[in-house]
Length: 332
Image (cartoon, rainbow, N blue to C red; front, top):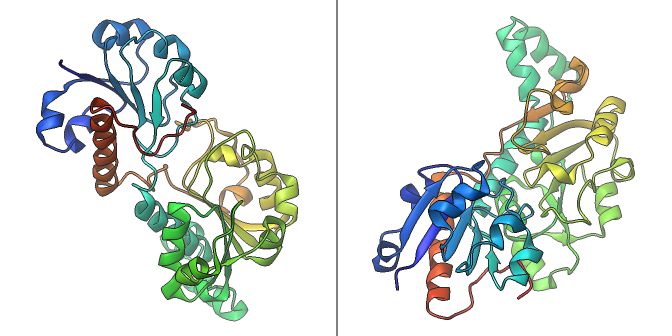
């Protein structure tokens, strides 16, 4: 029996990152961009056994329920909140993600944003470009206001693979690192990562830098609201390399305006792909200069994609052999 796989996402990703072996060579591959009509996907790959989808692309019941051979839906990344999990479960289809594949890459982006907000790279680059290098430097020297990471207590909200990778990168810098998760680690595990557990409210009150490492769920959507920010220290920093939907934009704007937040480093905003009319991009200068933004690139290094496609194809092969896949995220 010839197996078929449909990829919905950036054209070329599947060909570029698929490992070469006898199983991948045996599967017929169809590569289609996001945004096609359901009928087009069905016409070209309605009989597909496996479906890989870009994590920012919606996949609903209209397509899922009309693919009778479908056995596996696999996120190309870690996120899976745009896949209709209920529909997949009703139709007996495994849904999996690439948990851990991009951990080291996202951790690097997290550290970059932490250092970037502490050294205020947004405004300091502008200062140099506009001939204000000396006055800007002297201002820092007079006030002693530039911070180093060891000056800060860092709080990681969520401590999965990315949180752990972030803690490992922070260790040589000498920052105190705390974490919050629903099920705390053992004391031995905490010692291995050089972290200490704090309940969420206490972590927000204790730490100078709060870094988000959570998936989007009904419970975490807009969790960074006014009440969340109010519990943080005045002049603290927010880092988000997870998902923009974790943050209430209006509350973030208020926190930046009042000085509750000195700065925010954001690799992701809600409603991606982000358009020019996004609320966070249309604020007064005093708010805009307090945000260090990047275009959700934390997890898309070449190495992370290669690791993701290793996971994807191993899971497809497991299913082809009658085995359960790994990294399953739906109820089956």
